[in-house]
Length: 318
Image (cartoon, rainbow, N blue to C red):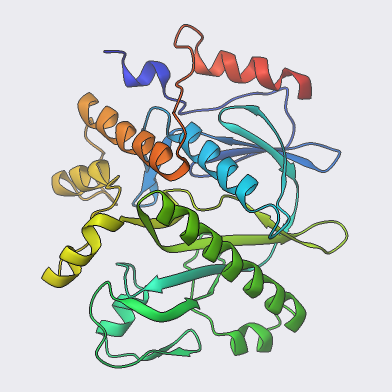
């Protein structure tokens, strides 16, 4: 088997491109003409650090988002200008709005800001919405709801917000809030419809919006990818819900769980992750792409090193 390190894109260094910013999983280059080159690496991040590089992860995320951007372009304008490489999108550079829009249709989640966590703590009014008593884990809500959070640009933690708080804190204008809310619910409805045709339930997802030079609201980042969204297999839902179990999903957390079982991932050195686990996680991402989009995944030609391919495809921007 090919070594994961030989095909995975972990580190990106293209000095001919200007204004480099390295995020946890994406590398960005801002061109003088207002375009942004966004390269999705294969890095997998957890516990505030990089754990490994998963073969084809960046391509899966870029191409899944591409599918959804194209399927929803009639609903909402997006930042995409071109795709010069399987791991790259060139988009408009935007001023990202300081509110992340999360849409949820089920009482699910594990983080401190998830509605299931808050509901189990006894809260019924959250994010400006009041939920009824008696809901069970993973139960569908009466209607999809928006659960916005503050977007922490400085490495801090996102905090829950209500519409009233967004307006009171002047994070968005009333018109901006109305627009992003309408966009988010319409995008989510389209996503649920297409997911259902693929035998999937789109449970929840997040959206990021930004402003272009004219102040127009544009969909940014990614959309309905397996990293930004929770999907369940529809065939498993009824039985799992009846048993009080979590429905079957794309389980990509092998690496995170393996690391957490063997060390304190916030303090200790990360142990060497088995090669088979990297490829197992890669296979889950590929399956997610093919199931979500209905398309066949084509891995790049392994005879050309991934970094050499990137440089060749991006040379037009040097």
